[in-house]
Amino acid sequence: MNVEIRRILVPVDLSDASSKVAAYAVELSRRLGAELTALYVVEESDGILGFSVATADVEESLEQLESEAERELRAHANRYLAPGTRVRVCAGDPASKVLETAREIGADLIVMGNHGRSGLERMILGSTAEHVIRHADVPVVSVPLHDT
Image (cartoon, rainbow, N blue to C red; front, side, top):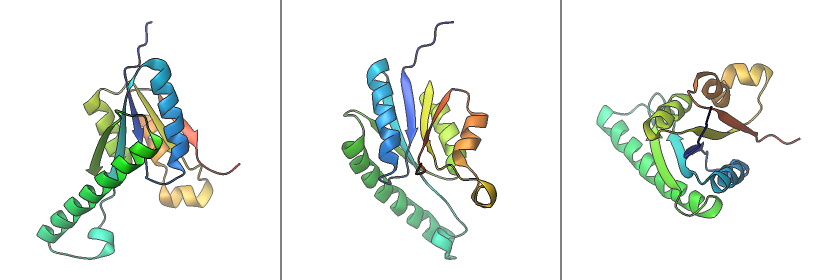
């Protein structure tokens, strides 16, 4: 079986901790000659940030959040990722959007952070990385972000 990795998707949360994920993604991209795409997902909620607003206001607010997130993602990519990294911002459930984007761009590999939650915290917050690992059509490299 001949496996060629041409496209790597790296979901980021724009925190400094995600620089560790970026470092792995950049090194894999460099070694494999693969194209790198950074993804940031704006999480939708019941109303924006818990406020109930009219539908038109929600759509406008979401567009503003996505626009701001794209600026931040470009800055993050310039700081932590390789030149030429593509950036994508979308809104929705992070796990679903990571899987959807991986299919859309034809990713051969996903490199993402894992906060290493366990117990009650994991039950309440869930694990985006775990969901992606279980449902992805391609291999997923999970980079631990917790302190050891």
